[in-house]
Image (tube, rainbow, N blue to C red; front, top):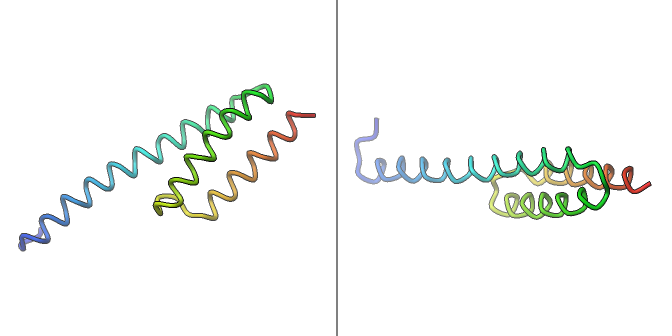
Length: 85
């Protein structure tokens, strides 16, 4: 348990940041599920763009690792190309 005033404040800050980061990660997972459930190319393009945007923002804020963002976006593009055929 923290004893110093600044340490107690740090604990509060960490709790706030953790909650915010969890919200962002949860939204990304929801968007990924929506993109995976898309059956036509147009729906996948729309949901994929939204997912890519959310991933880029999360990466910029160091919530998600940049390599994971690249991997997910690559798989998304691959799926879109497969549906377009």
